[in-house]
Amino acid sequence: MMKDVSVTRTLPDLLIEPVVRMALAEDLGRTGDVTAQACIPEDARFSAVFCARQAGVMAGGAVVRIAVHALDPQATVTVKVADGEAFEAGAVLIAVEANARALLSAERTALNLLGRMCGIATLTRTYVQAVEGTKARIADTRKTTPGLRALEKHAVACGGGLNHRFGLDDAILIKDNHVAVCGGAGEAVRRARAFAPHLMKVEVEVDGLDQLDEVLPERPDVVMLDNFSLDDMTEAVRRVRDSAFGSVVLEASGGVNLTTVAGIAATGVDVISVGALTHSVMQLDIGLDAG
Image (tube, rainbow, N blue to C red; front, side):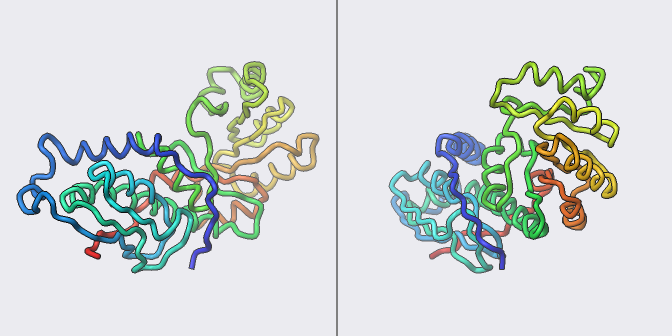
């Protein structure tokens, strides 16, 4: 059974609602749910539950609430499992009592988003458990579904992971192409340090130990070890910890999966970023059942 993770940060409705309304509009099309209109009396009521078909970690209760309330503001939506809590197959995650047409019209949008978010939270929790006993923490990336970043990054947090940059504006991350244009990794960090306000972090990606040695004197806050071998990663940790730059955070990236992540964590890195948390996740199987 997966351990629960306390999620103190909530996702504001102001971020969720535009995403949900866009998804509903896509599904309802030009004339709305013609099946519900044809088969269901206008004033019929329906009680149902969002039920897990497999074990996982909860993320997205607010998304279901907003989706249902967008079509029936008077609906009662009761979240039974809080974001960040683990559940077993068969668990009732959310109970709803609403206008039948509205609930059936919102069903697929709610299930699509809830299933994806729970899938991300569940996969993240698996990675977090794989590195237990080490100092490493699991982080996401910007490899998210366009338009769904806020939801997907919240789901990572529900699984116990860290959020990397939300966008291009909240931290400086110097990648290989920035280095190529600047003419060197050290020069790129120097320029970033001159530009950054005092609260903005500077991270630089390096692809070898020689680049690590080049950037450390420029005092980046974070160094990303990109596609390092385990031996080189271990040596990078040693060099940083035995130097005057011991406060630099080391982040491992590239070639990370559930087979390799424990070995990467054992090298002593601080953070492991995993694009697969959001770009390759499988949707968790959740259904809407009459209740």
